[in-house]
Image 1 (cartoon, rainbow, N blue to C red):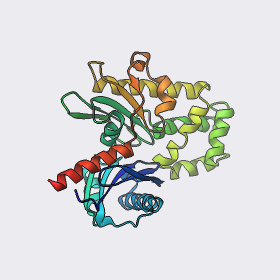
Image 2 (cartoon, one colour):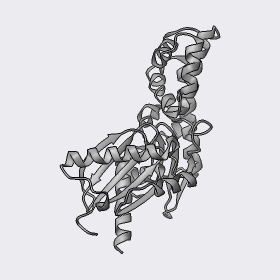
Image 3 (tube, rainbow, N blue to C red):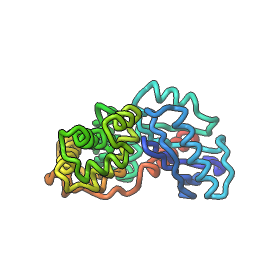
Image 4 (cartoon, rainbow, N blue to C red):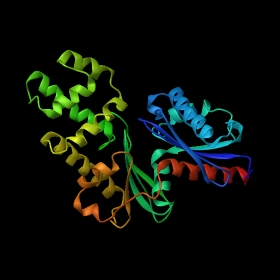
Length: 293
């Protein structure tokens, strides 16, 4: 591989984008963050966020950004939608190389260092994947908002806002949880809440997950978090029927939801070795090696 090239790992989700800039050997030079680049929020927006993150990463490293010297390894939410993926590739700048996979695959690469294992990625959306002992990758969940992505931030937010709806029209108590939710969305009556609901996307709902975690002793929130943990258990069971592989919970909700994962899986839970952005850097290394061969 030409030593003049840079390798860039991208982790793109519905809430934000993380960028790792590496040299031609994959050694970290800098890191940066930017807005969402999950493909479900729009291809143009995704590239805008990726470019903003790359500009910041290069600036922090004191290097001028030149796309023609960059090999990108992107792990993106929504990359399993073939139409979105094709448009994403078509809108790419003139790069030296581009590899794109679902964020589940780059999360797997980062979490277990390329070794066999299970990941459950819990962020704005959710997806789970396994790299088995035969080197095969399989995925469950990841069907997207609003019908899928169980145990994700958007999944939790979509459900916990119901507590505020019930509080406003008298079906439930106007308690601290309801007040926290209404304050967050800026609603004070049913009509103003409807305005928020009609405008809300997966990112907006995902931001409510923090309130669920902060009020985890509240019966309504506790029930939802318990359901989320049970959904994580279903993903693990589907991916590893043998019950022998290590499991890493990744993403912003990985730590908060750990205690809600059923006890039968607790002994197999491991901290991820690295994040999805560094998994993207590994993907960029593989693409660079392929281009050099």
